[in-house]
Image 1: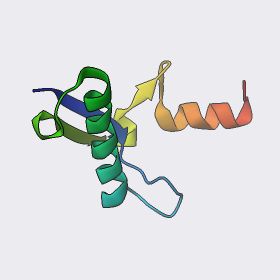
Image 2: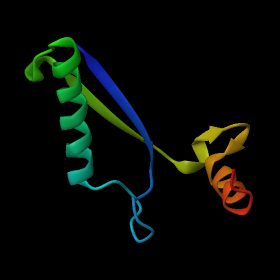
Image 3: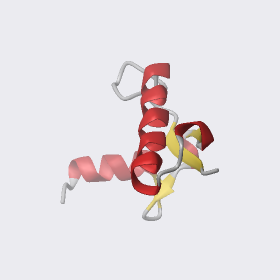
Length: 78
């Protein structure tokens, strides 16, 4: 019985939203479950998916909080 944990920052996919919608979360659950069925032949009813929303100030990458990293990338794109 596979268990998948998806971690996302607690923010919306558009500037006017502050969190992922129920529909977006349902799509993540469906997609992760389908992937395990397609790749490992794990039945949908045996797969558990947990979505953890992390506050942006608790998420970092490359030595920077994610908000600072994004600002840096906007001013200095690769």
